[in-house]
Image 1: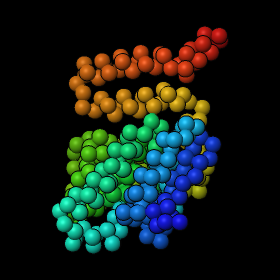
Image 2: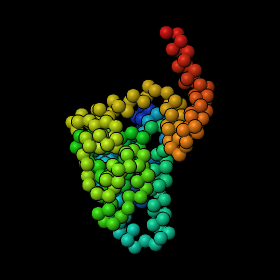
Image 3: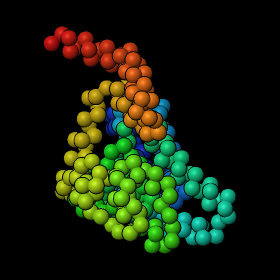
Image 4: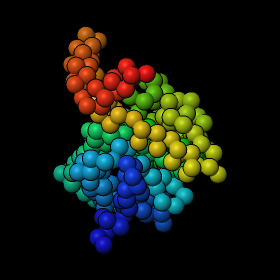
Length: 255
């Protein structure tokens, strides 16, 4: 097994693809192998039409603590082109999550910090254990959370984003829920069961409707109101022609 394969565990349970960060001894800190491993695992889901949802989690006590020591040392001595390549690799991961047609759900235990917090918030949905912690401490070492900023700004209002990014403080799961960084908070003791129940719901929903909804939701980011409505009208027509919609309407009319 390669470093990339061992850094990320991939398995499929019914319609759910499990992607697990597997560097618990390093608090699942990001490095080249881990980032590549996540991308490879996510790309595997494209070929499996039975998958309806992807669950991203971390082995051990923490979800992801950000860049690891070796990655930070690499930044310190790397050339401009090498640093650009590293940055683009992480950017590609964030884009991939948005481009996948099925929901990507982050299940966060423990810490989700810096790039790890960005990774969680890049997912379509975030489920957190009560003890989870979130934060962007990059400014403490003179670094800029530049790419995760684009994600955070789409999750929370401008002034809250500024506060989170420039103060470098950690917040708890309840505060993250209040801010809109997190969708649900579950008790630590029942976290796995509650996450499984939440994720399983997607097995009963229309895959095509969710895929079209996800694409449209992110597509309208840069559109004017009129353009967003026009895009919505186009998707409305496409949705009507799908097998799921036609079957659903027929079933409804029989009631």
